[in-house]
View (cartoon, rainbow, N blue to C red):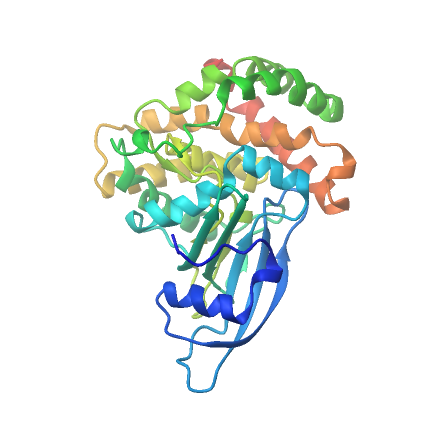
Amino acid sequence: MASVAVPTGIQDVTAEWLTSALREGGLDVRVAALSAESIGEGAGVNGLTSRVRVEYESGSDDGPASFVLKLPPTHPASKEIGLRLGFYENEIRFYDELAENVSVNLPRHYYTGMNKERHDYALLLEDMAPAQPGDDIASCSWEAAAAIVDELPKLHVPWWNSELLPTLEWLPVGEPNIEAANQRFQETLFPATMNNYGDTISPTAYRVAEKYSRGLVHIVRQMTAAPYTLTHSDYRLVNMLLGGTDGELRVTVLDWQRVALGKGPIDVAFFCVLSLAPETRRAWQWELVERYHAGLVEQGVRDYSLEECRRDYRLCAFAPTRIALAHGSRPPEQLDGEAGRLLQATLMARAAAAMEDLDMEEFL
């Protein structure tokens, strides 16, 4: 973590500040001027993300033409949620403490800053353009889906049943504040979600969701039992960049705010359940699970059968279902217009389909 002061907002990101931050990040440069444009803030976005374009002083070494800067959101309610759930600290600590020990494709980080007393956090990353953000609604091709799943053993194998993970006090184990989360899920989120979508889902999905709302603790304990590893825990297309400068199908994984200890198939389930249409998921999921398991074995995981992996995938479908049910509870005024309403309805429909056809009730 850098010693350069943490900006309280985009107004603090000056040429002088960026020069100091980049120098601590290993670039011997002097910034003459910069401009910043927002590339992400709104409903469902847990931060303010900006592209910072840079001009360097005459005589300075040349650095990258642009960077990506992540700050907490300016909306107070959104920031409060992120602080309560530890999102900003989690991502900073992932890059500072864990990123070097995974071979998953990540953007280089040049600066990480955290002032917990002031609730200020900042992350300066490599700009991966022309790679394009993934789109959960539009989904992706089979080739992209295979490449996305192929990244996961690179993340999971180095931390498979690691004795270090349970000692990291900041790292969530499945769900932070689990008892309070279970109570809130049962008393607040589930009723609100069913008020919005109860008449659109099948009786099976309704029954599974209702039981899950009462049994969150039970499910989380199963999803965090051995074998466990380091999980992204929001492994969806929206949190990935696809492509590269040479046109290759390269996957870069972003947004590590929900990083946690859990079973590896949590990340496979997030992608399959929330980033694929139900009919596509049904056609692809078992081949993708087999592909993931083969990658684990190839990279050295033993004593974890394909049968166990398939069962854990079904169990871990509760993790993306939890996200969809929470999102489904939001009233229309919190959904950022038509795009937000489409996202909410899509996540709910996909989670309901998974609850119906993955026999998830077995685990409740």
